[in-house]
Image (cartoon, rainbow, N blue to C red; front, side, top):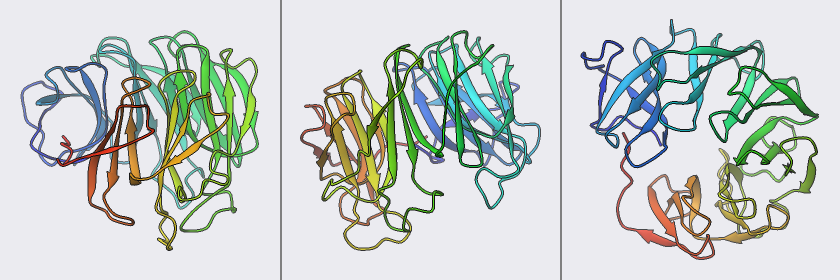
Length: 317
């Protein structure tokens, strides 16, 4: 979730209040402790909260506005990782850019470098020790695994497509979604060029599960998130692309067999984000009407088979 809201952000000195800050991706590891990407007039960085989001403390700030922090992932109140891009954004999302991964083991009080090199599409950690980073060169994706919190990385596999999303459950199961925008196979309103891979052994072997968006009827558009709560239960969020052509209104795809088969669920429509505390409880930020930007909260208590609209607007920091 993103926004500015009324949350208080204290600076690196722990006392001064940062003005003009905006919050980006926010992750809570328990009801009180959370991490957030933040943008300030001086640069972008990482903030933490220990009171459920009422107040936040800046824990990292890029040295200049020429660097940008993104793709924050966390495992618990002490361990988090963030990608820092060391060049301004270019017209191509992968061209002429390099990335670093910074990691903290003490709640953001200190940071160590866990990677520096080619542009990273993302990083996904399932625990304080185990996770993945996705490097992109041209249209080739190289997937690396770590078992020591990012101190060392081992090449798992290369794929001849660009990555879209990754989901991890525990130390063995991971799903990698490839394709999407930038492949030359998609329109401005929708895309059905996706490839979903799965590993059940920590990346030693990968199985192609196919295209989850194929023949999904009312669920069409672009994939906006991939999420798994267990090795069998998962969801895909969809929304229409920039073209906004009629007939592409998003929706939610649901699997109960680890991604081998998927079924379409609408409403919700125009789904931007998903969260799943368990295999049965799923929450979505989605629209009330097709092509609407009026985002509301939806909930499911049967694993995504049916959905209820909650008549409250979501709170953002």
